[in-house]
Image (cartoon, rainbow, N blue to C red; front, top):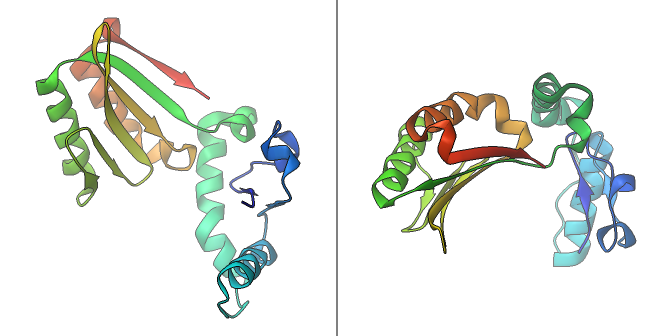
Length: 164
């Protein structure tokens, strides 16, 4: 396992056991080529190390700006935004459908839907059914309207948002 930090994350801020592994911060096109080197060595492939600065900018810069815009000085500390709330099966299906309507094709099964940096799961607990929504910080700005729809649908008394 090789940890790779992206979108403003820094491996130097990790705690053990991940901090004990040799990894790298992916901060430029050289980092992308380094990642390809690891893939080539691990899987005996020979992908050319041809990423450019423009490739890196296209893949990460806009997302990183969006994360910084959403979270300001705390952006490098945000790993995930989670929302949880009490629901029933019908509510879970409505939320699942909203994700599909918003994003189109998604991985889905009876207990979850995942697409474009957002994952919705139903979590049976002793208190009843809890729906958990996880959003990657790089897609937070894109998924914020969807989170607002969920909050309106569920009501503030039945849930909370946690930023990790």
